[in-house]
Length: 330
Ligand SMILES: [Zn+2]
Image (cartoon, rainbow, N blue to C red; front, side, top):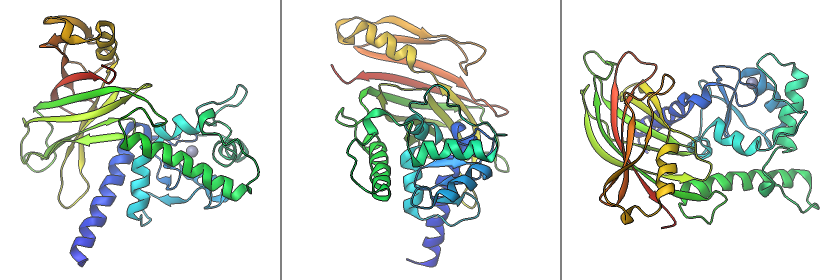
């Protein structure tokens, strides 16, 4: 590989890592919630603060391989496996699935001993895992048990991110088709304009639109697809400004609550049985990003919802979307 393409590749890998780090759930330590983590465990797939990183390092690299997000060189495989896990909340949904009563997560100011006890229980002894991931057979040595544990957990993420059938550990209930239509009045990040693109994240899945050059009112009209698992959360929407020579700048974000859409669709069943009608809405409130109530309609036998979002944590910008719900068991 030429030196230049090697550099480009390293640049895009670093960008992917920074994008992952900028997800809301990765803005705090996976183990103690301290803000602004700068470290990560590459094999576990979590972002960590300096203090928790110290505890991880003391467990040994066979359990946790810690790297600095800013200082260390990451291999493509390490970055891929971080992205596959999908960030702190996705990893914690496995590693902290069942925290027993009487055990509490350490806070940012916890002592070294409290941190140590929790982190060993969480990753080395894996006491809080989902029962389906706990290994029942005993005889193996602890080191190989550890390896098979980690592999099994990583595999469970892998299955969920590559399959949209219900044969993985995570069952999908349907598909969400998102037409990213337009942006309005987006923020300026370069000299005069921005080169915006939209990233949508649901659990460990991430999809994105193309980049539109020098446009603060871009029209994408691009359809993106996400598989929706049974225990879905909101879809995160982020807008970035594409930079050729440096990391992409964020131009705002918003959350899409997909619960109203899915609940109304399920209440009606097969939409082809109905004529065009309104079946529900996601209401605008002070704590969501909606510009107006987002009405859910049956249109020509399809369940659709128009959503216009005001981008958060940015000076200006709106994004217009159309969602369509496709249930899997129809
Ligand atoms: Zn921490």
